[in-house]
Length: 187
Image (cartoon, rainbow, N blue to C red; front, top):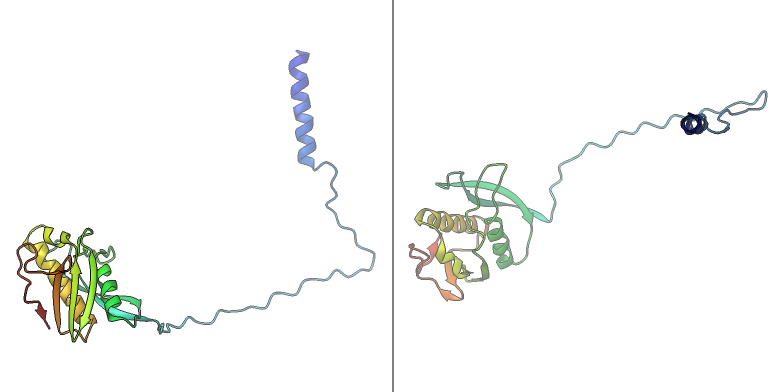
């Protein structure tokens, strides 16, 4: 019995000593007649109202994505960085077409495997060079949504473009999967 009481008694004494602070003095002493200063209240500051100042380095762009059923295009507005190069800008627009918009429940009209290999712009003709995945679009509806989304987005945002032509791996495209594209698309 002594063997079980002794550890319990030691644990109780140790716990009591730890909880009482082991002799720490938490009281403060002041000299008689001393004035205890009270801290000055912090000055109230109100943040200035946030003003919506448009960033000079960004621009609004129009992007066309497919609706939830992939039966029609939905016109959306997004913000992107301003670019001096229209060919670089066309690449950025194409990348935007590869992303869905969960907020508006729209679907990316460009499949993930379709890549834009290169872009040229000469005398109003924008040439988009795709990899050969563009020839594997599933069905005529997918192909039509793809072509319409790419062309409408490029025409809306690149005002100097009057014609869009497609290439596949650097060669002029005749047909994607079913759609004839050899004559290009005109504004």
